[in-house]
Image (cartoon, rainbow, N blue to C red; front, side):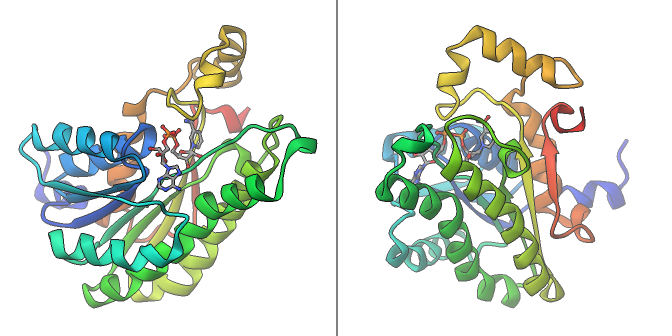
Length: 258
Ligand code: NAI
């Protein structure tokens, strides 16, 4: 039997969460995990069909969810998103910044547009969206922000210069946001996933040799499954992590430890 003291560290009942990238993959799983810990989740993504599916999946479990389709590269809409989330469930106390892209271009084929787009969605949107959530979090007595970093926050992979730059940037942005806001009770951390099966990694998952190589690179001996993210997401979104801030936590089966 889990005691109340411990149970309460992981209980998100009634906390409002805003989750980006929630139509697919990692962001969708993070939103689902938060909902299962009791949070009311507001889902944001540019993919309206995926959002509707994700919302239904959560509602089927008896939890509360709502969504807004939005292109997060449009900075003018970020305030509107926070307002919509606030109207649905109150000011977000939890924010997960998971929307992201990797265009996988060889370095000499990167264009102004592909560079800007990657940085805008992977790095700039998390900053401006987080900052838009800060007043509500402060008024509520604190909050938890979870960014999504990558193995590429620490090392280079082929055909990923803008992606790697954005992920190195998000690691540092996590520290900067923690430095600025933690004294107000706003806890900011990032997870750095290894290889997980999502739309973004389809090119990797379509290549059994690379996939097996990536699995061998981990200490555990396999690539990630989306449910491997549940524990860390709930932990970093609630009181259990209240004295951990500005950290980038690998969730990679030990890939980065070897
Ligand atoms: P995914 O492609 O399944 O999900 C990304 C979501 O972001 C999609 O639903 C997409 O519609 C949304 N999105 C992209 N651009 C958007 C925009 N301009 N406005 C609104 N929504 C937008 O990919 P995945 O893998 O779930 O990616 C989630 C995060 O995890 C990304 O930040 C990615 O860099 C990161 N990541 C993923 C890893 C993996 O192995 N899958 C490993 C390390 C990090």
